[in-house]
Each structure stands twice: as structure tokens, then as C-alpha cells.
Amino acid sequence: MPKNVFNPEFSFDLSGEPAKSDQDAQIEHKIKLRRENYLKTKRSDDDESELSDAENQEITSKEDTVRVKSQSAKKLAKQNSDFFEELNKAELNSDLSSFEQMNISKPLIKALNQMGMSKPTDIQSAAIPTALMGKDICACAVTGSGKTLGFMLPTLERLLYKPKFPQVTRVLVLTPTRELAAQICKVTRDLSQFTSINTVLCAGGFDIKSQEASLRLGPDICIATPGRLIDHLHNTPCFNLETVEILILDEADRMLDECFAQQLKEVMRLCSKTHQTMLFSATMTDTVEELVRLSLKRPVRIFLNQNVDVTPLLKQEFVRLRDSSERSRETILAALVQRKFNDKCIVFVRTKSDCHRICLLLNLLDIQAGELHGSLSQTQRLEKLNEFKEDKINVLVATDLASRGLDIANVRTVINFSMPMTFKHYIHRVGRTARAKNSGRSISLVAEADRWLVKEIVKSSKEPVKCRVIPSDVVQFYRQKIDEARVKLEERLNEEKGEKMMEQMEKDLQRARSKIGGECAKANGAPKRSWLKGVDYKNGGLISENKKLKKSKVKEKKKEFAGDSDSDFDVDNDTTDYIDDKAEQKRGAKRNKTNDNILSKNFRKKIRKF
Image (cartoon, rainbow, N blue to C red):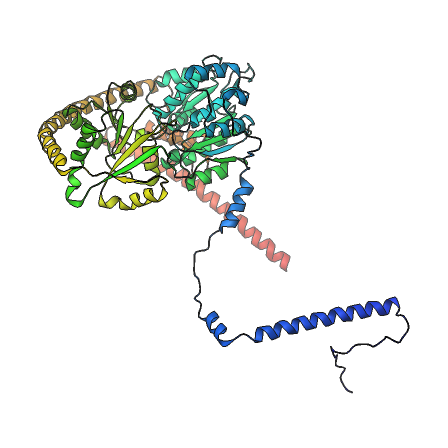
């Protein structure tokens, strides 16, 4: 029997026949569609078969691209747009010429006028209205743009309408350094001088007993550093973060660099579940982005500049140090400071010993200089800062301790005696000048090993970067002066070394006395202060009090049999072995019970299969 073959070119000629029925019309329409699809497929096959040999050779000659799989820019941008809430620029009037247009209350306006502030900056115009809405904020702006006022002014405005009772802490501000915390506290108190809002500073280096007394009264605002805050959370009665409604993280990337990531997450967890979080910094890192995604809820992203921008009012200069002149850093620094930049100048160094040495050297050259580093007490740090602000000293030699957030008026020059380790630290160093729409200058002494950092700075700078060349005869003149001063410098350092040894011996003696006093206080029932040792941050929470109690009981049993003689020592070992044996028996019984449960489960499974 012959096979039925469908001919696609076949068509029905029904021109002379009567009108078709509905069923015939549907069949004809289906046949027509099938025929068009067939012809289209055949045409595309013919086109593909007509590719030339040259085109085939060109296609096969292309190399495969092998790369690490990562999120594409479009996909990442889409995720960012889904996570962050867009800043509605239509609602935010960028032409705000005064704080009155933001509906700020009269007591705060009066304080602003007294502080000499009338027109908001760009970051303030964008952040203040958004913060007043109660939204989470992730803001990045250049140094000296007024970020402190951008988060404190809306916070104080919201606190004006707080209920009078109960009196609890509603705002927590975290900063990486004590100096920045003290500065924010001063600005907050100046802004709230015509209100009844209370502010307390909880930072290291200040009297902890007075801080505890202030926290018990329930201040409205607590400005703290992470370490001291954790200390108070563990040891100050009646102080917790359950009532915190606004959490502000200033310079969050620095706190994360100092290994406070788990502590910050713990603090956020302890705050009220509906709290508002505002995060401000001049530089944003990957760790900050991770913290934002874990802790903030649909934050408004306010990035008024790129992540590594410096203000256009900053003039950046470099002095190149060749291999032969690497040892002449001190000479070039003396030539720069004594000839040109001896007024309101900050010199950044890398280590505390370099900071002290350079300060002594400049003083021997009749330059009024002070030092600021971590080895000084908090009182000494604040004294040096105040002396520099009040023009009692002309040059401040500092480590990176002074590179974050400090707002010192009219700093004209920043000199990098040694380049920082990262580009981000360079941004914060030079950000101490050219603040609040004032011009400034940065000069960096660059060696051959710092070329990569210079290239990155030049690449990211929107303004031209200049190279400063010091005449050779000037360098030779100051080299002789440095050699003459170095003899006195070494004598002074040796004297200080002996004084430090005496101070260390006195500290050890005082520590021994305090330890004896602490043991006596413990015997009298005084509570012992605890800090990070009592916290299990790997599991994301505090160690339960039951475990602490069990450990303390075991230690007490061991101490009951402690003595000085050999027999007492043997009894102590026997007691320890007895306790360990009991604990091992309990663990063994628990393991046997677990094994029995597993065997019974397997037996029941076999019974079911059978």
C-alpha cells in the first residue's frame, strides 16, 4: 500500500465551488499556518548552510574566555536597587538656603545661629529630611562636609517630641575613637543647649564611675566607643539597649577594621526591633556593605560623591624621595615646616615612636610642636588638641589616631611624613584640611615603594597633582641642622628611657597593690568586673549564666583541697581526677543513651521494611 506523502506546494482550487462552511474555513486556516511555518524553517536552514568558509574559519579561530564567575553589573545594580530605597529628589528640595525651610524647631535654630551656621551643606540637605521621616540611611560624603550635623540635628528634632516618662536612653551614637566621641558630644551639647535633652559621653580614658552614675539616670543620648559600651553593658546595673530607638554609626569602616564587627552586630541585636539606623562615613568598604545588608532595613542610599573622592579645594603635592635620599625624610620635613608650613600644620607618621621622635626634633629646631598618639593618656590627648586649636602650638605630629572625623578649624597643611598603608587611610588623613568650603594643601613624602599609592591617588584625583622639588642647597643646609640636633635628641631619648623604666616599675607595684586589694574586695563579696571574656561572639550571643555557674562550682571544689605541702598537692590531684572521672562517666552514659536510641531507630526501620 503506497504511503501518503504531504506535498507542501499542494493547494485546493475552490474558486468555482460554493461557499465554504465554518469547519472547512478552520481547516484551511490551519493548513495555511502550517505551510508558512514550514517555509520559514526551510528558509532559515538554507541561510545557515550558505555560510562561507572564511566566516567559519573566523568563528572557529576565536579563543574561549575563562573567567571567575561573578555577578554582572546589571544584576548587581538590580540587587542594589531592590535592597536600597531610592532617594526621592523631587521631595527633597536641593535649593534649601536655610535650616528654617526644613521645619526645624526654634530652640535648635537658635543654637545653630549661635554656632554661626545658617545654610546647610549638600549632605545635610539630603540627610536631614530623610532622617526626620524615620528611614534608615547609608550616607557617604567627602571629609569636612558636615556629616555630624547631618545626623545629630534630625535626631535632636525627634527627641523634642519624646514622652517625658519614662526617662530612658533613646539614642546611641558609636564612634571608633575617643576624640571623635568627645567632639560629637560637644557638638550635641551645643545644639541642645536650649532644650532639656541630656547627653552622656561613654568613652575610654574618662572616669567610669561617673559614667555609670549618668547611665543609671537614663540620659536621652549616649555617645560611646565600642569597648567602653560593652563594658557598661556587662557591668552597669539597669543599663541596656532595649529602649534605643535611633542607632548612629559614625566612621563604621574604622570600627570594622578594628575587629568590632561581631560587637556591632550584637549591639544592633540588643537595640529595639523597630529602631532607626543611620550609617555615615567618608569611605565605604565591602565589610560596611555587608553590615548594611545584614542590619539595615530598606536604607536610603545617599552618596553625594564617589567612595574615594577628596574635596576639590584640596591641593595635593608630592616630594619624591630617591633611594639615596630615603634617610633624609627628617631633613626634608624640617625644610618644609620651618620655611613654608609652620602655621596650623598636621604631620602624620606611622608609629608612636616616630611621632614622639619627630616632635622632639621639631622642638629642638625651635618649632612649637605637639604630639598626639595612643600612648598618651586621655587628658594629655585633649590638652594637645586644645593647644593646637587655640594656636598655642603650630605643628601637631600625630598617628592615624587623629585621621578620623576630627574637625579642627583652619588647618592649612597636612604633611604625610610616611605614607599610609591604604588609599582609604590617605583619604582620611588629607581630609583634616580643606574642610567646610575652605582651601587646604597636602604634601606627601613619597619613596619608591609608595609608587603604587601615588598612581592610585593621581588616577582618582579630579584636580591636577603637583610634584614639589626642594633646592639641593636648602636640603644640605637643613641636613647640617638635623645632624647637630640629633646629638641632643639621642641624649633626650636616653633620659626618657630611664624615666619610663622607673614609671613601669611604679606601675607594676601599683598593679600588685590593686590586685591584693581586689582579692580582699572579692573576699568581702564585691562583684568582679567582666568584659569580653564573658561573651561568646562566635555563636552570636552571651554565654548562659548556667555554664558560668557550673564552671565556678568546679573551681571552688578544686580550691577547697588546695594547699602548700606535697600531701595537699596530691589530694588536690586526686580530687581533680575524681571530678574529671565523674564528668567522664556522665558523658559516657549520655553517649550510650544516644547509641541505644540510634539502634532502636534502625531496628524499627528494619521491622517496617519486613
